Amino acid sequence: MNIVVLGMQWGDEGKGKAIDYLAGGFDVVTRFQGGHNAGHTIYYQGQKVVMHVLPSGIFYPHCWAVIAHGVVVQPLQLVEEIRNARGLGLSLANLALSGNAPLILPFHQQLDALFEDSRYRRIGTTRRGIGPAYEDVVGRRALFVGDLLREGVFRSKIAPLADYYQRLFSAHGMVVGDMEAAIGEYLRAGEFLAPHVRDTTVLLRESLRGKKNILFEGAQGTLLDIHLGTYPFVTSSNTTIAGVFSGTGLSHKAIDSVIGISKAYATRVGEGPFPTELADESGALLRARGNEYGATTGRPRRVGWLDLVALKHATEVNGADSLFITKLDVLDELAEIRVATEYETDGERHDRFPSHADALERITPVFRTLPGWRRPLGDCRRLADLPAPARAYLDFIEEYTAVAIGHVSLGGEREQTIAIPR
Ligand code: IMP
Image (cartoon, rainbow, N blue to C red; front, side, top):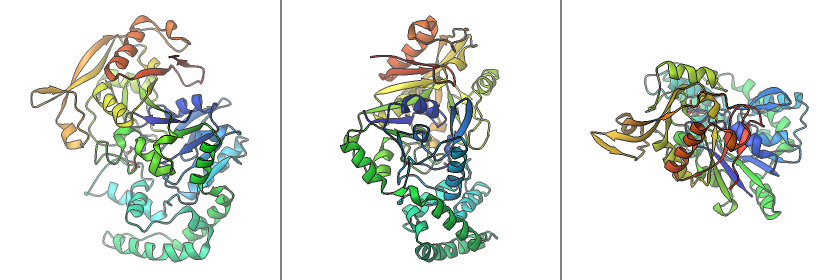
């Protein structure tokens, strides 16, 4: 089986935990979009490990861990992550990095910060240079991982680009940093990464032909997709199923099943509309119980009730075959749980998700209230162990979205997961 794991919300759905749970059965795990804006938290041999670019496959030596060409790569960050992983005793001989992955360059990070701090736009980005790096791809002036391996080519491509950014920055009283030092660091990172660089499309195609099982590891979530998310408060890649194809070079025929990951409630980091956001003590309780602080930036996450209108939209965009519901245990102490089932716009009730932010800002969510269970769920191992209100909550999600729930997660540990056989 080749499976795609995608976030159904604004990222941070617990994909790391879900992928770690699923990855043991795969021969290849590949990332296909995003960059080190992502942060997957995994517990490895009792240690908490946060990864930003490395695919979860690195924990399984039999498994290829692939960074495909849809991912934007900051080479210094990647080298650091590889060194950290080696410190955990992992060899990383199983890591493959696409030579065609676009580079995040120092001035991309500067431009990201410039926009964030300016009066033009504030998205609440991770300031990692993700947007500007993808802009250069679309603008047809990007540099790629493969360029790092040929010093002459790298120098001849980066010089005019640095000049372009210098002119742009001058208008804002800024300078591009010390390029000679940066070039040296990037070239050294290139040498370090060289043994891993290859054509990942070829590797993935050969894996397909060899009937290997591939796990496609999404980063961020559907509502942050550049085309289908809450624009402009989105990231700069296709976080949805579409990103799998452009980001790997495989076709839809490579996919057997799409698993959508959603928390049992909702969170969002950064700016932008969030219809079910909670500003009261229930929100504070969920943030504390769910440890809702960004894995990449440490920012407190905004917290709210589950939005079923948005979730159904996300399952339809991606053709989700099943849902993996995470963090159900975070709701344990609540007497009542609310879920948004409709939106109201100008007095009209409907269940259409308007993805552009200005339209979404004009809706008022309509809630249903369901009973809580007020019991700790962390030790439940089978569906039958769950109290009736918890099962009723899951049934409600399943009926509304018309997508089967295949897994429920009740804590950070791998065993705290219920697989629901179909
Ligand atoms: P960027 O991807 O750094 O450009 O940030 C754009 C938006 O996506 C901001 O709202 C970020 O908070 C959000 N974002 C980016 N990566 C993640 C992630 O991995 N989890 C949650 N939100 C993210």
